[in-house]
Image (cartoon, rainbow, N blue to C red; front, side):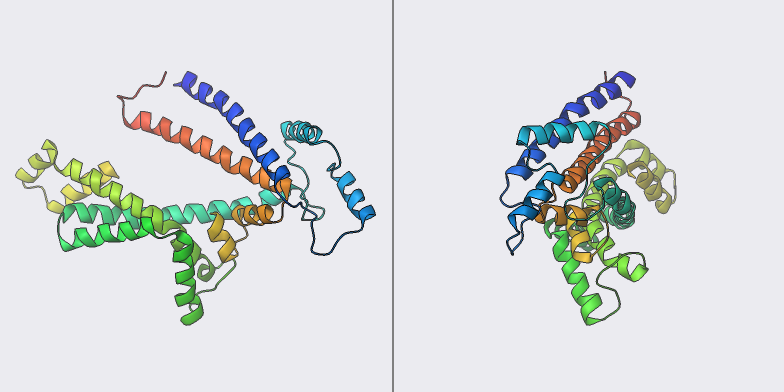
Length: 287
């Protein structure tokens, strides 16, 4: 297992390098630039700014300069936020993004698992059809549409919740529900499938035959089976909003920095899932 983890971590290095390289050249070759304005900037001022950020250098030299700074953990200065580095911007927004993601995951689990288990227990009933219809809607409807609908009804019409911001409960409900609804739909479908598989096992039939209360049977089976656009629309001060704004404003360093962050998260989470999966299923052996 340790050799497998070490090998996966080593292979993550060239993967991140390829991602950074592609993102770097795509951002540089895209039309426009970080200092493009509707009003034409004087040539002398444009030249001074480009010299300050080394944008006057050949593209290859800029690339190697960026990679050298990256190896030292320096993601560079932001081109759009004066006197702020990309490291500072990510450090300020990351806790909010993690909080939003954690709350959305908690919401998805609290809604998805009971819905899936109840659908399996009432298979082919109205409850089952309702739960699976809910999951189908959750998977099909984009989360920004869900968010816009929640904002329209609960913030604009009923004036119960707040449209933007983060920190108070009335600001957090809409983005958390919008982000977590799709995942709760996936979890509901997986929970239903897992529950149906478990309740058909021999030990479940034996438990029922011996008079074990039905609620304990279902509980035992359940135990066995058991943020980019959102932040932008909701005004949540997280990394997702910064990523969207940086891409629109051609803030090269901030865009690449957030891409590195999200790519690293994906690699780590995929590795963590594989490791946990191996512990849960002894038949799986990684070499």
